[in-house]
Length: 200
Image 1 (cartoon, rainbow, N blue to C red):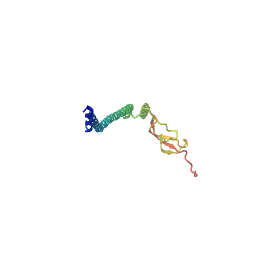
Image 2: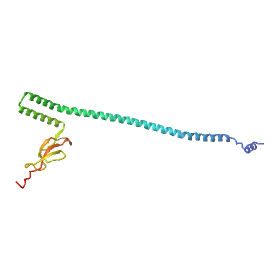
Image 3: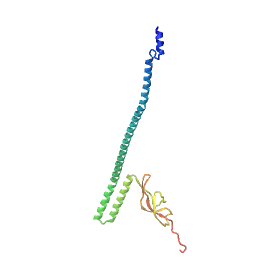
Image 4: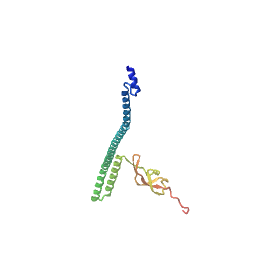
C-alpha cells in the first residue's frame, strides 16, 4: 500500500487530513476570543461612561466652588464700596456739623440774633457747597410750571400775579444726583386768580 492509499483510508474513516486539527483549534480559539471581547465591551463602555460622569461631576463641583467664591468676593467688594461711600459722605457733612455746633454755642453766650442769623446763613451755604461737591443738584421750583416728574404739589393757592399751574412757593427743596431723583420738591402751586362772585 502506497502513501496515497493510506491517506485515502484515513480520510474515509473520518479522520482529518494533515494540518486540519490546527485550523479547527485556531477557529475555535478566535470564536472564544470574540465572545470574550463582546462580554468585555459593555463593561469597558460602562467604565468609560462612569469615568466621564465622574469627570463631569468634578468639573461641576469646581465651577460651583469658583462661582461661590466669586459671589462672596462680589458681596465683599460691594459692602466695602458702600462703606467707602458712606465714609466719604460723612466726611463732607462733618464740617457743616462743626459750624452748626459753633452756632449753637454762640447762642448760649450772645443774644444778638443778627449774628445768629448770619451764622445760620453761613451753615446753609456750607451745606449747599458740600452737596454740590457730592454731585447733588437742587431742583429749581419757584416760578416754574409744575413738573410731576420732579415736583410734588402739596397744595394750591389763588394768585393774581402767578399763572395757573406755576409754582408759588417751595415748601421743601428737592434734590437729584445726575439723572437720579433723590426726592421731589414739595411745592405750593398757583390756581390762578380768584374768581369774583356775581354779588360783588
